[in-house]
Amino acid sequence: MKKHSIEAIPLIKDFCDWLHEQKKSPNTIKTYRRELEKYHEWLQGRGTGINLLKKVDIQSYIDYLEDQQKSITTIDKTVGVIRTFAKYLGKPELTFGLDLQPVEKNNHIETLSAMEYSQLLKEVKEDGNPRNIAIVYVLLHTGIRVSELCHLDRSHIDFENHELTVEKGEDTRVIPLSKDVREYLQTYLDSHPHEAVFVSSQTGERLTERAVQYMVKKYKVTPQKLRHTFCQRLIDNGVDVETVARLAGHKDVNVTKRYVKAQMNNQKVQDAINHAFNNDMIG
Image 1: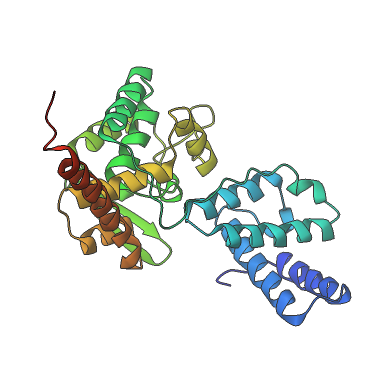
Image 2: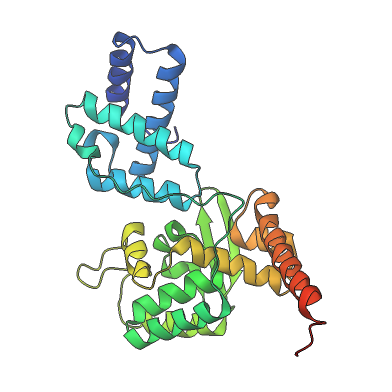
């Protein structure tokens, strides 16, 4: 772990001792320990810890894993570990009724059609909320993850050079900002004095990933679908795979190549239809 807390580390050790008493195998105990340490480190980045286990934080972590495109198997395993840990603490109710969304398979990419794209922007602008307009434009025009959006500070935005700096762990990438994004971001930032870019209008505190997901859900989209749309539109407009991978923060370029395959599949269907029907004659 990168960070430690006085209370949490002994707590994890005690939990592992309890697992040993439950006759769990050494490999199982090692896995549980590793998953709890990763969860604890994530919590510490949000000013809390595993010794202060809360249902809202468990749900937020699940949302984070889904946003990172972790597999269903990985998420189920993590939830299982946390569920067992909650049972050990005598608080099994903390894991009751969690919202587990299906994660898109790597070979299936959902993007907005041109009509859906225009309709989304029309609807969010008609609603007239400057913050929500800025969020949708940033997600669509930069392709950043919802977790990255929620951690944006004013210092990450360079209006003069039209750039957005995204920091994720030790990795940093710079994404050009479109004219529309700059316009709507500036309008929204002029409405509040906080260092965090996206904040609650009631409390002034930084928005959570869950709050953003809930907001865009009313437009029948997800942050991940907007991210997919960003990548697909770049590929469709001739941007090379390496550049798209860098802008999206893909460590594995094969992840980005999915968008090329999707483009090729769509073109094959169009070509097949044209070939099949272009010689049809009426009458």
